[in-house]
Image (tube, one colour):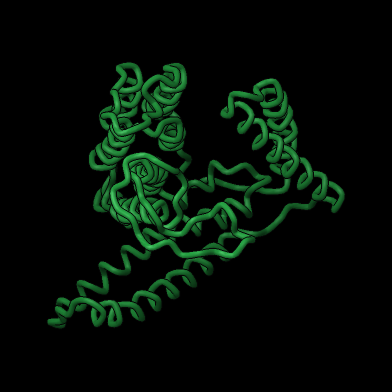
Amino acid sequence: MWALALAVAASRTTNPLLLGLVIAVAGFVVAHRRTDAPWALAFRLYAYIGAVIVASRVLFRILIGGEDGGHVLFTLPTIPLPAAAAGITLLGPTSAEELLGGFYDGLRLAAIVLCVGAANALANPKRLLKAVPGALYELGTAVTVALSVAPQLVESVQRVRRARRLRAGHSRGFRFVKGIFVPVLADAMDRSLLLAAAMDSRGYGRRGSLAPRVRVLIAVCVLVGMIGVAVGVYGVLDGTSTWLGLPMLAAGLVVAGSGFVLGGRRVRRTAYRPDLWRLPETLVVLCGVGACALLFAAGPAGLYPTGLEWPSLPVLPVLSVLIGALPAWLAPRPVSLLEVAR
């Protein structure tokens, strides 16, 4: 919840200074509170993905010109398009405003991705099943397996690289990728089969005794409720249709909550090691929610820079983002794998 709140705060602004501060806060908390588990090694992968996102957004601004005028930096040969694509220009003049706009948009999306990567690096994806409502149990199982793919791939790549070093293999470039690709895929397939077998032996996918009509009612309630929540959240964040967003959000929460309560009856789960919700966990959530709330309350001043001027750094948004760094000290101390084995 801390990472999701930080991601929502990052989506609120295109100020590169604030977005850089959000990325720094997420990386700082990960560096101080991550474990030595496989999923904790995936944050660097998300950093690479964020860099690719920023570069791709800038390249798309060069490829498809979206603005006229401005301070033109260079001009590329224009590629003519048919009449059906009128209004779209390929290449041509590229202004500094276009490049800055692409950089700002890409940096915002990269900050959101890194916040999600921080959550994936700090939390055990498989333990998230305990917090998933019963109505979304099968979907939660699929999402949990999907979230564990990137950390497992990182671990597989490191394992194969260590094995190649022991065999005096130091090739680089395409030969290195070709030599590591098949072993990583084979290792990922083996681990997936082991995970599927372990989940099947523990009863994942089994359903309780409910009538077909009740199951249909649960599915309809959850689907309609989630659609209402999505429309309501969009209306609230948009700001121009709050009169529609708040009622839709409330109605969607009520309908989805009813579906969750009914769906919880068909799943019977036991917990060998229940996760205790104590004061540190509450403080971590409050830090994320407080940072997001303060950034929304700060107003739009300084959050959306325009032109070629150096972006300002408003005080209240900076303080709100810095609140998100408090979990580096407030969160419980991470437990290493050696301590778990003992």
